[in-house]
Length: 282
Ligand SMILES: N[C@@H](CCC(=O)N[C@@H](CS)C(=O)NCC(=O)O)C(=O)O
Image: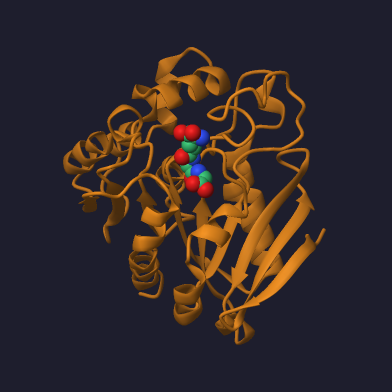
């Protein structure tokens, strides 16, 4: 069924749209946003999925990321899902900002009661991708993924778990080794259960260690050094070491003074869009 358009706005010659649909994977209505660049009038364009961080929705990136001007210039479609199911009505779902609603961690939960609706990996990789390719002027063969914090974890892990789907990947301040930090331990313990070996299938650093150069054209990561989550939660040095072991080219840029928020993200947004465009148009 076609998604319902909630609002559409002319933007840099393209259209910024917000949509709602009934998701089969999630079993609930889901919202997402799409920026369609002007080039889509001529035919299918490359698509970049952006995965947002804790507490965000499908709106946050489109409002604060500052991506549309350059996406319109390059002819890139931008798609952002919500960060979790909404309205699952699981007890405790909204008690904390780093778990449950707004914190789906882009994986399919295996543990009750989360496993029924919290299926963000299947939703993003399969259902939403298929919907975007069917309903929008999107080129199924030119798809990239990027994201921030929890969504940076999502981008890296989904790209590593589905390299045939995503041709390019980058991240801002990703949770780079979630099985070793409090945010990841809380989310994985509840969504995936106590078996830590299973967590490694959703840990970008662990996944990278057992892969052979999955993205030969490189991975781009930006990290602010005034980010209050850097030392305890993000651990980019773990992913950096894993990439060195796997001979995966990585550009990890550390920036003095920048914090964790969207002023940091929007500063480096253009670089990420041009990075993906170079790979997706090769
Ligand atoms: N609520 C948290 C911060 C949560 C946070 O920084 N969320 C990031 C993603 S991990 C974000 O993008 N927030 C939305 C925003 O900055 O607009 C706190 O009080 O420390």
